[in-house]
Image (cartoon, rainbow, N blue to C red; front, top):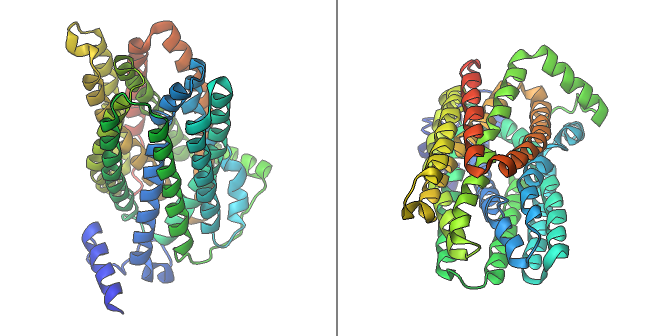
Length: 437
């Protein structure tokens, strides 16, 4: 073993707390030997992806982009449903195709490259887009970006399951979230310096860095040492749908997990509304956007490693606790909006709530990813991931549309109360899930 490989193994063992980097639970021996190297490739790939996700966020950055180019306000309400559902809905239809490939990392590479191209297109729209036409092009580009994200997502989880052993995956996701949070924190700090100056160039730069992040993601994915896997079980789209529906009927734990995951959408749906309360105090100035990006990055940097370790121990308890946390954050945000005083008319109280909710949402994402990968057997992991994500995509469109109507009817503060009740239901459901570690 070379000196570089020895150093890599030692660093891997320090990051994971693993005394022997060649001890593996549920992956092939050949993959186990490559695990330290693959761990760092996964880490840097996830860093690029998470950074790009933050800097092209449909919760923060894209609403500012639509505001800067003068797009109609109704378009802002479509950003999060398109971003989430567009990434989730097609996954069941590509799962069977990916299953036919002995190496699934190349689907991941294609998805990363397409996302980079879409981010560059958004950067150009920040510079040259105007009005309704510019806004429409932003939405169309976001659809393309989200579809590419879906392709990457299913391939990423399948490759993760083949190359990183159980009780190491949550650690990996946690460390990548922490490093990405630190880089995002720096980007938000730079934005705060722009304060109320014109934002076209700054937004284009942010989206350009997002494109670079997805390029790094694709390059790292291409270098992962993936042992060719079984190709049996590849299905066309209709066969995948029938098999998926049968799994929902026969596998009660999988159905129960998807119910819990659906209720946990409360944390994702609450984020843009908490940000909206802050935006109403700061307008479209880049200083307010910078503050929200800073607190988002700081929260992710602090939270992800903790949730990662906890997910490896019991991802079920993470899902339960984050449901409780999401409910508390929603009620806190609504409570601040109701309180009298000048301090509630500033952006920083809502930025604090936003940071707490980002911490909770990081736990939701890490907990459900770890639970799903650990629950699914190696042969059906890609299908389980695709089916769960497709169901969530449908629900995101339906529930997202309903929350938009409720927000218009009840107001943002009372909508947060409704989402708090939904999050409490998620906690109760997750508490009854079986452990899968």
